[in-house]
Length: 130
Image (cartoon, rainbow, N blue to C red; front, side, top):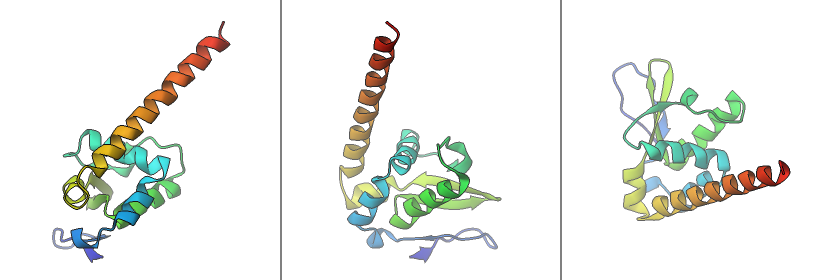
């Protein structure tokens, strides 16, 4: 992993180069529901950068930090410091170049799964309220 070049004096975080990104690392990173949720949110506005605190996750701050580290070290996201905040962006260009169609297929499947879960919850609530 190589540090990302940033402004002079800025802190740098190690990221894998495009050539260092491995399919098994990406699949491992996206196998966790919290990390997949982060990637879904980033993909919704893939040109934007978001701080870690932007994401409303059902885990502690230290666990959130762990999830972002896994995503960064696998090459799924790029993290840069802006002041004291870590800004996160999806490495869609790298992922699409290395694994064409993979990210879109995973995001589509995750969206379908989330929609089915929501429908089931609504149905259960309607049946329970009768």
